[in-house]
Length: 251
Image (cartoon, rainbow, N blue to C red):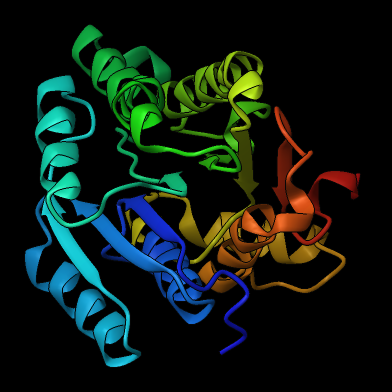
């Protein structure tokens, strides 16, 4: 353990599996106490907390729907009951419908926007009173915010909106000493990717075009989040950090 963030407190949404789980464990390994929000994976959330507690950290799992402002308010109230402040807010939870754009509905649009973009602003409204100067907000985006990916239309649009919201929050919260950034990940082979009808094609194309190798792991993305939490990153704000092994520069 490097313990570079010893004594800091992190709140991570979607923290029970995949990239969110990797982020929680990375921050715990660096000395953070954590609260993780999950939607319906209670057993997985508790397992992550047990791993954190085994390292001597305080860990709390809270059920919430981040697309619902009332649920977020209730989750932060529960968080406040254990932790007096939050140093790092990691907005990672996401949802989406994988269909051609012409098959998507208003319901799909609203759900993507509410969960993937609005949630960052809703969370910020709730946690800013608990966040001291030096605090960090980091949202997780994807290359679909800038590129057309099959069956990804509304998810990509919501990620583009998320990045825009993050820039506005960076401008508004800068005078409070709070930094707001985005980590945009390439193709990561998580359980979520198994739902893509073109999963094998995506992985093959990604591997072919990526200079650093064919596999991008949740730990790689978690490492970028960790970097933005370090004291040395205090003046980085309003930035989208792309973690893709060089995919975007390769033709």
